[in-house]
Amino acid sequence: MAGRRKNLIGIHLSDEEITAATAGERNPRVAGHLEICSDCWHQMAMYRERMASLRQDVCFSASRSAIDWGRQSRGIMRRIAKTRGAEVRSRTTGWALATAALSLALILFAFIGYQSSPPVVTKPGNTISDAALLAGVEDRINEDVPDALQPAGLLVSEMDGSGRQSNRQHSHPRIRNAQ
Amino acid sequence: MNMLQAAAEASTTTESPFADFDDFIRLYQQRVYRLVLAQTGEPDLAEEITQECFIRAFQKQKSFRGDSQVFTWLARIAVNLLRDHFRNRKFAIWRKIIRFDSSEPEKDRAEEVPDPASTPEEHLLRRERLERVSWRIRRLTPPQREILLLSAVEGMSIDEISQVTNKRPGTVKSHLHRAMMSLRAWQEGERT
Image 1: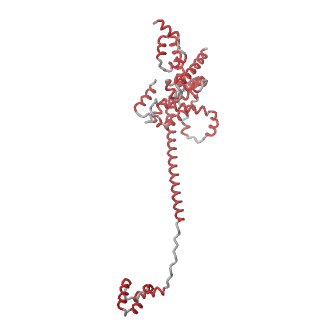
Image 2: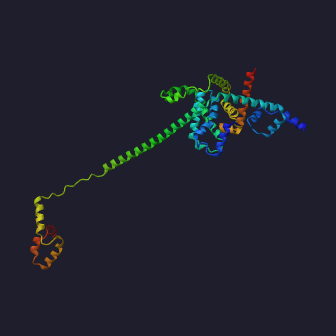
Image 3: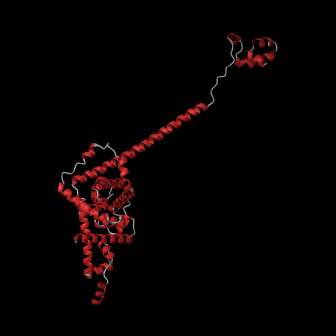
C-alpha cells in the first residue's frame, strides 16, 4: 500500500492537469492523486488563488452602482424598441411600396388595355329625307291590312284573283320590293 | 456561484428566459459587462458591446434551443462580438469619423452624468485596478484571454468554454494552461 502511494506521488501531475483540475475537470486519476499528494494539492491551491485574484480584480473593476445598471438596462430596452420600430417601419414601407407598385401596374394595364381595344366607330347610316319618312308614315296609315296579316292577305288575293291589282296597289312597300 | 447566477440559472428551468426581456437583461447584464470589460479594458466600449450583445440576443432568441445554459449562449454572442471588434479595430478611427453624429438626444447626454453613488476615490481605485488587469490580460493571445476569463471570472467548465468559443476541449485546456503560466509569471514578477 505504502509502495503504491509512493509510486503515485512519485509521478506528479503536470501543470496542464492541475490547470484542468482547477477549471473543474473531474478526472478520477487526478482526483486520486490530489488526495494523497500535498505538493500537487498545494500547486492547485496556488492556481485557484491566482484565478480568484483575477476574478476579484475583474469584478471590482466592473462593479457599478444600481443607478448605472438601471441606466444600462433602460438603454438596452430603448435600443431594442428602436430596432423593433425600425423593423416595423421597414416592413410597413415594404408593404406600402408593394401595394403602390401593384396599383400602378393595374392602372397601367387598364390604360394599355383601354388603348388597345378597337375604337367604336359609328357608321353613318342611310340618311332618309323627311319627305320619304312622311311618305312612309302615310303609307302605313293607308294600309288596310296590318303587317302581320300581309301574308294572309296575299293568299286571299291569289285565291281571289280579282283583287290582285288593288292589293298590289295597297300592299306595303317592303312586300312590293320582295315581290 | 453567487445569488445572482443562481437566480439566473433557476429562471431557465421554469419558463422561457426571454419571457420578460427586461428581467433577462437585469439578470445577465453584470456578467456580460464584466466579461467584455475584462477583455476591452474600456468601460464605454464594454457598455456598447454589452448593449449590442442583448440586442443580438433579442433578435436571435428563437435560435436558443435550451440545450445549454442561457449564459453560455449569451457569452457566445458576446465572444463573437468581441472577436469582431478586435478584428475591425484598425478601422475604428474611420468609423468614429463616419459615425460622428451631433444629433444625439438630450436625454442620452443627460444620462452620461457621473453616478453620484460612487465617490471619485472609488472610481479612481476601480480604474487603477482595471488598468492593472487589462495590462496583464492584453499580453495574452485572444484565445487565451477569452478562455482564461471564462474560466476564472465566470467559473465555466472546460465543456462550457468549448461551447462558447467553438474550440475542442483539448484546445481549451491547452490555451488555459498557457494563460495560467503567463499569469503565474506576472504574479511572481510583481512579488519580486
